[in-house]
Length: 121
Image (cartoon, rainbow, N blue to C red; front, side, top):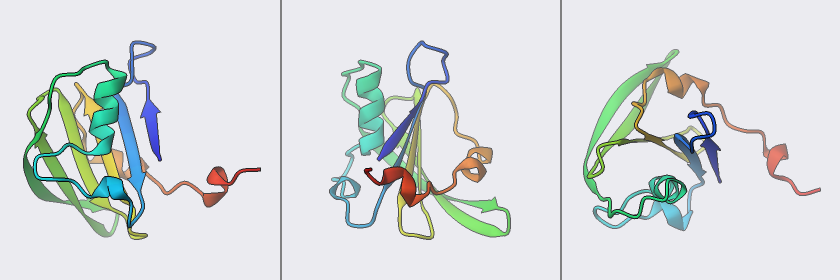
């Protein structure tokens, strides 16, 4: 599941946030392979240039009284910011942003969505 946020006011998506549960095949990436959310962001932007992960860095971030370990991905396309972290329910959250930095304040806004949103009626 992923969400697209149009922060550019109709000029295209600026951010994609993905939530991948434990065992999802999209979590298993080869060396240098970009996360699913980065690929979706590039597709939405109609950008077909090859992009790869160059490096990763684990950064501790305080979220209230909890310590969150955020993995920052350095990509070959410098206009994309990408971070990942694991939630307490073993869901991998990936945030990919176009031409905007991802600040620590954003993590506090991300709360798990209720299961009822995903039930078909």
